[in-house]
Image (cartoon, rainbow, N blue to C red; front, side, top):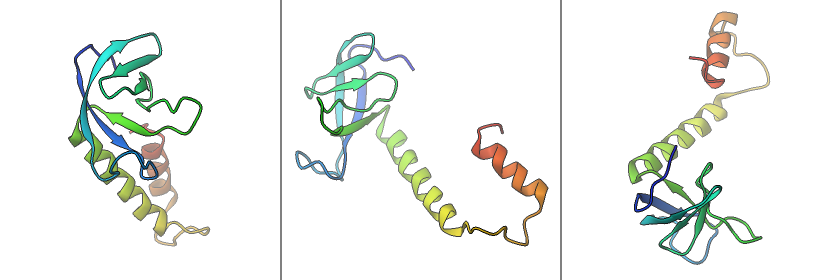
Length: 112
């Protein structure tokens, strides 16, 4: 992904951050782009690969997404993953055969 100066991003603070409301994201603009970091108009800088805000030696205060819709899709995928994880057990569910399991592995590995 290539960021551009002036591009609008959706910045969401992490839940533990006490500088902003964790349930509210804000629209920010890219002010400057370097080789590794992009500076935002909210005085944070983000890693251009991960879109994670720099914590200046501390934990990251937040994350950027290309849009609010992209953020909501990420939250939806995380929720679905947690739901799937709740169904996983140590033993193979007897109704799953080897072919079905291999298909799931390919999907998880991004091969399908």
